[in-house]
Image 1 (cartoon, rainbow, N blue to C red):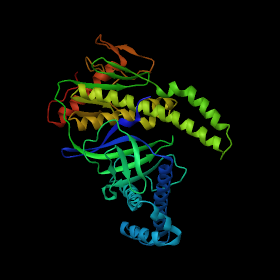
Image 2 (cartoon, rainbow, N blue to C red):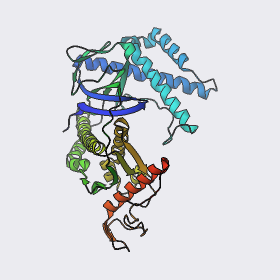
Image 3 (tube, helix red, strand yellow):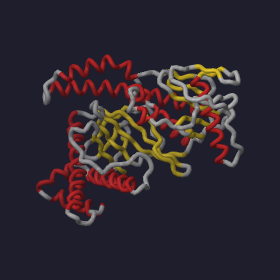
Length: 399
């Protein structure tokens, strides 16, 4: 199993600075787990109370409750006998819970007004103690710190052991403590560093994604599909059958549920680690990378849903995009309606649709094509054409 402690994801880019998130595994003591559970619960209650207040105001036709009013109401609630226990956790954790709610509302309003791109965002929902993921966030105001002994010191929790796989490049601006469905704890640091542009290369590549073969590159190389979920299906089936036999609400059921969650977590971690390595290699070896803009959500509604989810196309292309931005490479998506499998990469003739079982075909010009390699060549040509068109160059679909 790959180590979970060295996940690194670029989250945003501003001018020459890039914001990164570093995740490290944490190992709190039993007492610290109790303190973390208390902090998770308090943050959830503050979030739900604020959401309930805004929903009540909306139903009663009252004005929208502002962020400042919610913060003031939180301060008053901590003085009341019903919510006095909120003072047992760091005030920064509670304020960040309100910030999360405010962000959720802003995203919702931006989505319904068309200002936010992508899938439609729904209104904020209440959090449950039975959620699979719990998180609290500490900013610089909370004065969290990494001790000389390598532990993470957080207020009202203590010094927590962290499994460091690398040093942080600079002082973090915030840290989020996460507990996942498998009962594992992670510290997620946000740091801001300079771009690390790689030396420029002449190589460019088009990528055709698939299921039996994960990716075919226009340079002729292939990446076989690892099928991590398929490999773990036997263990998952056994664990899920054991879970179904346990009485609801029993301790045995909780242990069986954790076993299922840990099996799924192992599959997800292995897939993520593999995608990081493959995307890093492709970005390192090519100046420009072009992929087809697949409709993953649509494909996930077909009979191939399990294989589509197992492939992780969306995660892989997102990593390519993030790493290309960070390392000074070019990444572009070719229109999903572009007939990459129907065009002859030699003469440009359109030969029409072909069923999936047709893996090789011969063009009228005499060229014999491998279906996936020909599509990769066409994706590369289309990506280059779009790039030259954007820069005012000559447009051509010839490879």
